[in-house]
Image (cartoon, rainbow, N blue to C red; front, side):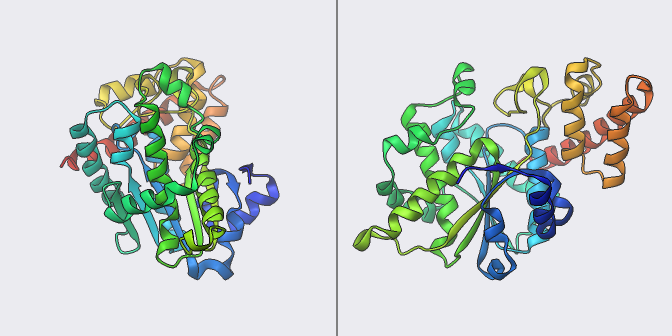
Length: 330
């Protein structure tokens, strides 16, 4: 089933389940079925992050959204920091991936992730490695060619990708992540990610369907997978999204305060909409403050001062998150 953008009716239905957190999402793929209150007792949530660099404003927005979602649904959540996946799919030293992974785990808890209902792990998890090895038999090379990351060519152009096999291995680990809750009794899984990662949902569904029809070779899993996809945070400098792997596209938590300030206070009109999105999704502000920021953005031509003030305040907020990030250095 393809991911569908929210229409007014869909947005209202999602908001019934998620409350204010619903505004963080723009697309869904059979999510309402798994969010049905009748299925809540058997619901598990899966999300994940690549520890390839300090969080950008885009990554921070997803982290904050995942924490809000956990609080709203009160369902078991698995948060995966895909160290081994990133090792295979990106050109980064292992030591750097481990350092960022550990810092990201501590940062997530500092932001408010509840360790009592959320499992925070990496791709070194033995159970997931075994599961990845077992589900590989249900997928073909053609499946991975058909279902692949939408930004793969962009990353390749920047020399960021590992080998072709490495990209497949990364996908296999993540498919195993999505399917993990079925192994411990869940029958409804909600995959939460960016739209560019929707192919993981497709691959996981193929495995779930094929293993169910495999007779003696079945894993014995049954259930359904739904997905919610976060709103994409537009990138700076004309890039389609803020990406950890493309520094010019983003602001991130390892930047010096004056560097963050220079990018956020840049008056180039082409980047202003992206900055408003960053404020909406990664500032941590309440709804009233975000609404005031939207109004200042809309009035910025006639009244530039309020929009400038908003951006100064966002610099302060983002730098506060950056201080927390630095304190989480392992």
